Length: 172
Image (cartoon, rainbow, N blue to C red; front, top):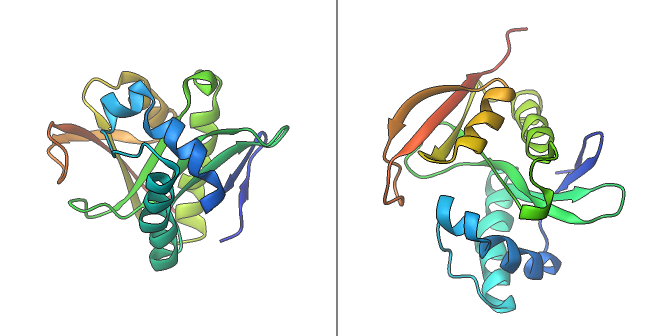
C-alpha cells in the first residue's frame, strides 16, 4: 500500500529498519499501561514483532498498523493504522505516539487519515476502536474524528474491560 500523506505526516508501512523505534514505543510507560507488555526488549524481539505483526497483517489484509513520520524531518512519532483484531467483528483503528509528540494533534491527524482510507480505499462500512477505560485522552481523539462510544466490553487478550467506539461509513 502506498503511504498516506497528511498536512504534517507521512503514514507508511513498517519495515525491519524500524526495530529500534518499536523498542522505544512498546516500552513507553503509557503503552505498557494502556496497551500491554508485548515483551519486546531487543532488536531481534522488535524485528520478530514487526514481521509477525504489522508486516504479516499488511500482507494478509492490505492494511495494518504502520509508522507515523513527521514529514518535515522524517522523525518517527508513533504508529497508527487499521487491524483485524481477534474478538472484534469490525476493523479496528489503533494508534500510539511517543510522549514527546503527544498533545500536538498528530494522533488526530493520523487517525482521521486512516479512518478516511478505511472507508474510501478499502470500502469498509464500519470501523471501531477500543481504549482502556481510564484512557480519557484517547477517547477524546476518537470522538474528535467522529467516532462515538458504544459499549464497555472485554476483548480477547485483554485482562480488563475496554471502551468500544465506532463510526459508520459516510453515506454517498
